[in-house]
Image 1: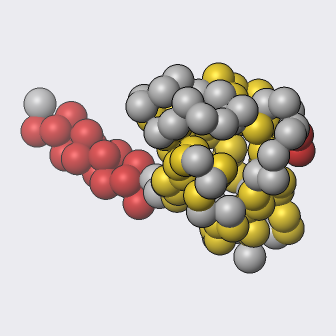
Image 2: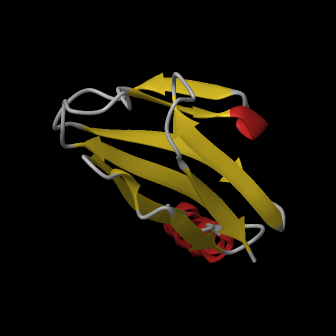
Length: 109
């Protein structure tokens, strides 16, 4: 029994040592569109966009991220998480689902 407990503790700490923290980036949709318009993230680390639409006075009721083949509805006054996975260096553009307003960019550097 003691051996099982020791092995469990060792495995737990080894798992924690390899756990990768996600970068959670907050993004809002306001009357000015997506804010902030430019987001900096680290490469090779999982990224989650947490988006809250705070207005009905815009066409941004959904978001599209063409490079990741993502289109998602954005309910009013509720946060939506979009898991982008691990990103490589570069730029990823995003915008409204209708592609009618200037969106923004994620800079992976």
